[in-house]
Image 1: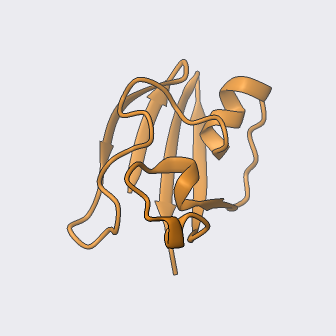
Image 2: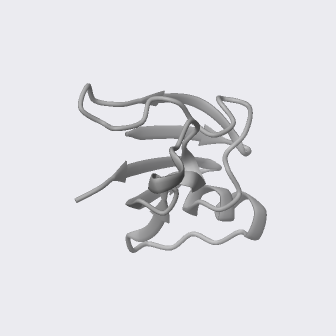
Image 3: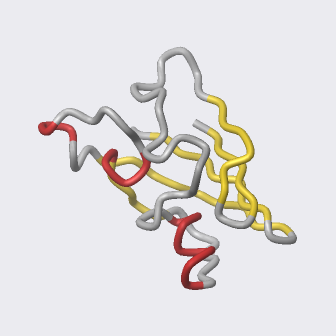
Length: 89
């Protein structure tokens, strides 16, 4: 999945047909706080390396047994925009 955000709000997102989740946690209303992109907006952090995130951090309609399903998030930062790339092994 790829998510583009600006000022803490999601501008657009795209996912492949085989990505396991289709719905973002807050829709397009806001970037979830417990994500790399969310920490950029709330804590001004902009790590250059890949970070671990969990299904419950980014996605809606996560089954209880998948709450801590591990994903990876890599972000590119540019003039207030954040491009998040999210994937799993």
